[in-house]
Length: 67
Image (cartoon, rainbow, N blue to C red):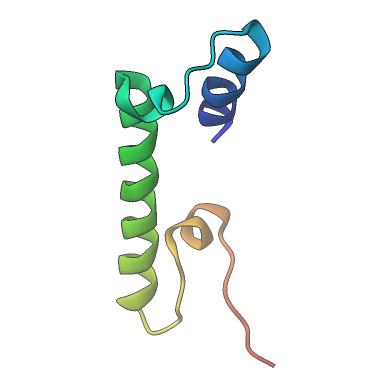
């Protein structure tokens, strides 16, 4: 996430921003596909276990508790 923030802010700061170029260039495509991949992994992991834990819950060692 930090990489994508830097990638999208840097061209604006240095004055080289071209609308639409952030997605058509290779780094932008990598960021976009990585984001989509993370979303799919989160959704699949949450939908396939009985405790509704997403991937970030496994990484952090947390559990969803409903009150």
